[in-house]
Length: 296
Image (cartoon, rainbow, N blue to C red; front, top):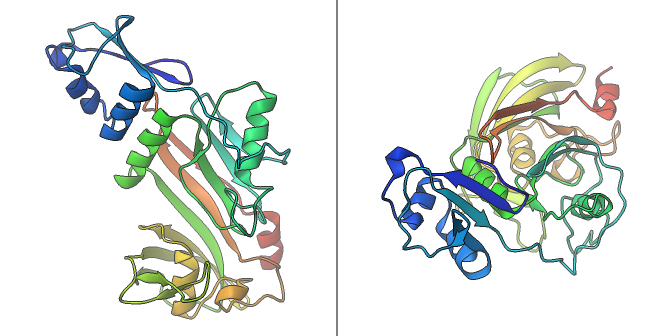
C-alpha cells in the first residue's frame, strides 16, 4: 500500500479477484462512512480511471482512493507553540505534550492548544494536514498524544483503538502507600451535576475500567503504572481518588497540592500499527522533571 498524504493505493490480490470494489474496500477495512465520503466528495480510481462502487476488480488492479482536500477550520487558528515532537511522517505525528496545554480548543481554553500549535507547524512546512486526535489526555497530564494527519489514517487508528490494538499506559504518583500490588477497578462514571468537567462514580454512569500495579514506594506516596481499559473523562483520577489514593497535586479530586502545582500523571507508553504500512510502532518516555523532583 502506498500513496500521497490524501491518497491511498491498494493492489488487488488473486484471492480478491472478482469482488465488487465496495466489497474489496470493506475487506481493506475502509468504513461505510469513509466510502460515502469518497463517493460524494473524493474519488475512487481503478488503474487511473474513476469508477463506481459496482466496478468488479481483477487481480493486479491498482485501486486509488483520493480523499477530499483539507478544509480550513475557521475556529482553529494556527499559533506558534513549543512542541516536543517525538515522531512524524505524512500520516501521523506523536507529541510529548507538556502540562498546561489542552488538546484542542474549549470554552475555557479557546487558544494555545496542541491543535493550534500543530496547525501552525504544518503551515510553516507548507504541509496539508488535518488534526485528528487519536487519544486525549487532560490539560495538566503530560505525555504521549497521537494525532492522525488525514482521514484515512484517522479511521485506521480509531479502528485500532476500538479493537484494542492500540495500547497505552500511564505512570502516576499517588498519595499514601498503596497496599494492593495489583488491582482492577470497575467503577462506572458520570458527570457531576452542575459541573462542566468533574466526574463521579455512579451506577447510572458509563462503564470505566482501570488496571494498575505498584512500581515503587516513596515517602508518603506510591509510583504506580495504570492501564485504562476504557477512556472516560477523568477516569484514572476519579478511580484513584475513590481508592483513597488521589494523584499527588490533584486539587479537584482531593490530592495534596503543597509539593507540585499539577496532578502527577504521565502518559508514557503507546503501541500501535502504522495506519498505512501496518508496521508495529511503540514509544516510551521517561518521567517529566517535575515528577522526578517530587520523588527525589
